[in-house]
Length: 464
Image 1 (cartoon, rainbow, N blue to C red):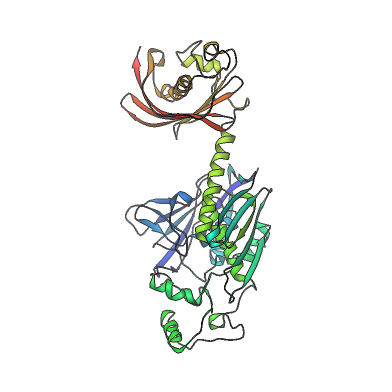
Image 2: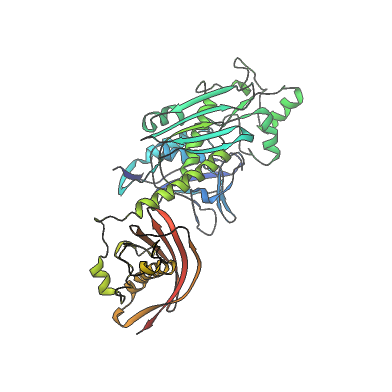
């Protein structure tokens, strides 16, 4: 198994934000296992960490913006691409403004500074999203199509064609992250069409942009008035140059023949970190952009959470937190109403517990429910969830032999499919909150990784 990684020491550098134009210092700091990527605005009085996850995306106007409430961090994709490209799993990213420095419009400076910090392994193992079946996002109106296919590593292929003859059609592919990212993709710069520049500027964007931080592709006539306006926007002292390459403003030399396509692949690597885990899949993308990357990341994030729950909720005979003898030493229930066979996981920090019951045809309720089609009653599934959640309470109570936990109420109960003989009922229960001797729980029951029932319930502990 691969180990998670972080940086060895704190590193910083400063610059100007692309869209906001704000001076900004970015500081990368080491972070513990399972921390992931989190941004912090140190220019604000309240220190709030913004996780780099799809749930925190608040805007996609020519970049990916994360936020919580009014606190936002703009244009994070190049930072995230550098971290993912170097296979750094955990990092705290502090910013002195609301946008990272744009530098030259690529990720190469971030890569260089992170390499200066050094990379170290942590004890925890790396968790992947392993794509096991094709996952697809399509937007016919924008001619976007993205698909993830099963493979045992991470590969990305991108095709761009925006029906603009100034750029034409380009494609590129990354097949080995460790060998190719730094030299072949990290230095690919952002680009835009000249016809977009005026729109971006009028919308309050590219305030920190320059011809040193982006490739501007000429796709319209350059009359004297347009030339004057561009010189003012980009604060150019000399006249514009239209040289040998013709289609690039100021004759900017490309670093790669297909640099725009490579930058779109770079953006995609950055945006897909919002899944919350490194990916094992072959990704094929036609005309991707930040909005489509975000929609696709949501699909992958959902698959990752389902996969994580499924693997976590498959009972293993090797993993026992509390067996039946231990349960009977704690719980007051006995046959035929002890509805847990084993506890397989307990996280006291998050107040989450996982247990299971093997449902056999010998259960005493099956002859009456129903003789010809045995189905476990939904109320008993709720009871099994409550008994599992009760162990969170009993683990923190003193003199438990003198106490009982009583139901006070159930709400939002849903039963999605029958539980029948032969099923293994896995119950995950989280303590939502406690007030005095009253507890509120959220319980979810699974069979074969699929949800069969869920409910919230309230209980109180009382003296016998």
